[in-house]
Image (cartoon, rainbow, N blue to C red):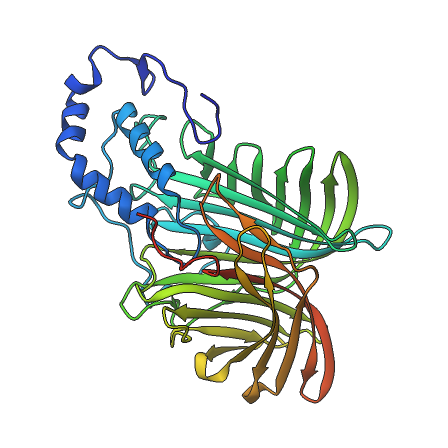
Length: 423
């Protein structure tokens, strides 16, 4: 079979000729004996709605079947467990740009607004996801076939003047060099898609001849850590949280490719990196997330978790960074978000907010956000199995009595159906 999330079938396991039928081997007997506990472990991994993007039901069965064929032993309940995101985490950079394989779930996310030579405008999003199955990195003597983690990636580009939105998606197992994330330097890849570091710069490469990007991002501000005491709390229980930071302003230059045409671009990007292990609370069905860059130097991140009955979850919060570099944690009671318009997807029938008013009364900030185009919906049936809206917005408002404008990105989940496990 092909390379994208699939494997070649042969008479070798881990580089050695197989001398026994799988069902008669020691690993096979152990896998057969622990079938139920392994299945539960997989259910916990792939059904978990930890912030963003669970993996689909069909992917669960594919990966479970693949693990049996490879003769590996998955992380059963009595195996070493993943770490939880708990208070007290001390961020260190560039260390924390890299992979954290003791945590179950991790992603590296970029968005940005770009301009071409003729003034044409684009938005982009590129995200790499890592889902751990067994804690830690592959042992030095471990088999290259061992399935310890799965990688997924999404690329989306908005062409504003043409009112065109396109996206690509990929998935692969983190073995045989198909996909991975390094722990000694910042590099994440999924086949030909990758992000890596060059000094303090970040280099992004993803896509194909039809849609692609190759960008260099230069941070102009230090990392902004979200939450309190090193954790961004998402649920009421300890560990229902992530370690989360952003690079809120990154000078960007490079190329976009559309239908074989290479377009030089420049602009401003935003980067998020989160890692943790546990899921959201059961009564949380989706969220609205905002990143905003204003022309007075103010940067803002907000997320609003939505509960089953439509209430805003009390763990919703945000972070405000002022032009001078000072930052402030924003608890939910200091944030007011109001939907001004809505848009119904002709593809899925989901009804999404399509304009917002954001008020931070204690910070004398009032903003209005409008999508650059309405249709920026992703239906990721070939990877994460989640339908969500993620798109570029323009921002106007008043900050401390003065007019401001800016750019942003908004992500919304749980509008086509409640964001709950599929299995």
